[in-house]
Length: 94
Image 1 (cartoon, rainbow, N blue to C red):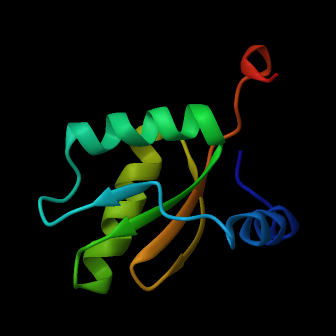
Image 2: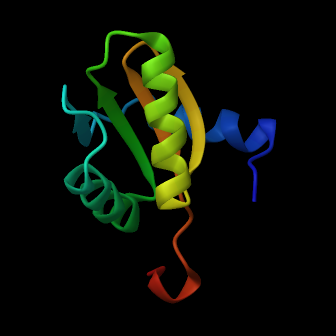
């Protein structure tokens, strides 16, 4: 389900103090990166990423593919840093 503007604003505020948990290097989007992001999303729901690609279009493409493959929602991108969110299923919530 897409996030509303108000939900994005709240998530951006929560993500402000986070450090990047997943780094995407020069090799781009690999299966290892996807697996690492899956673990991070299962643990934290809200994850900040660092993307090493120099081209803006390439970074946007990586974020789009990442969100599609992990069923995460895009929250924001500033420069080489992006924030994604995926709500935990109810049975995993503590």
